[in-house]
Length: 181
Image 1: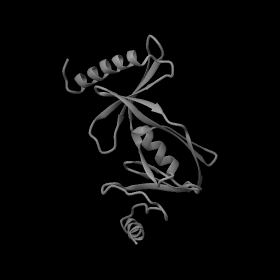
Image 2: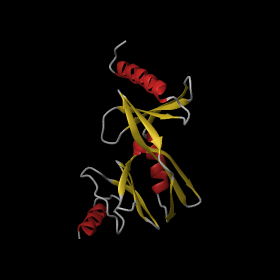
Image 3: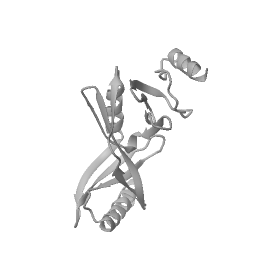
Image 4: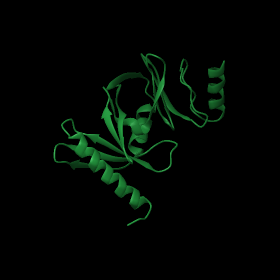
């Protein structure tokens, strides 16, 4: 009954309705932007992130945690990141295994995903370190003011050296944002 009511209200308000069978619980301020069906369940793009089907139901991946989304030949391939360490104002990330979704009638979903993922990126820069290197990305987080500094190290990167460098970069960005020399 509730899902039927939400779909009806979305249609009346000019929004995109939730697909039949979607079992996620949207936040009160969360708006549906696009959706598409896959064999594993619905994918739903909102202003807060991308809902993907999972073994224990739908779950949302924040736009700032989608490192890569590729749309090709009816397949949406997602690379999600997880935060595994915080260093002062920086977050170190590692990629999770890619997930593939063959979409039936993709509609606007691939375009919305592309726009939201790239739109969350404020700046990106690659840095070589003494051992390895890392990509430093400033990203907007849905529902949060400002940006977060994300760091994606190469596999061979020395994590202690990376943590120290990330700490320095985060401090410098903090001073710049607050106008302190």
